[in-house]
Image (cartoon, rainbow, N blue to C red):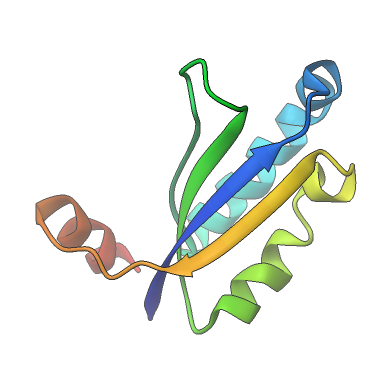
Length: 100
């Protein structure tokens, strides 16, 4: 399995995101239970609204296909999405890779 870092940039419709958040989180939790989503969280600073998500998968295309089903994506709340191979190292990464 390859690890992928996904950067979401959200649009400015915070109220709409709030309305869909429970479905979005359930979607990610299901992917985590399947061993595909390794870590995910929205950015909490004052920059552009968005999130960083880490996934394990066979290809970027496979991850893209999964993320097309994210309730945020289906609602049009993601302004931009970037999926990149992430070959990081260190103790945290070793722990994540062991769960994939």
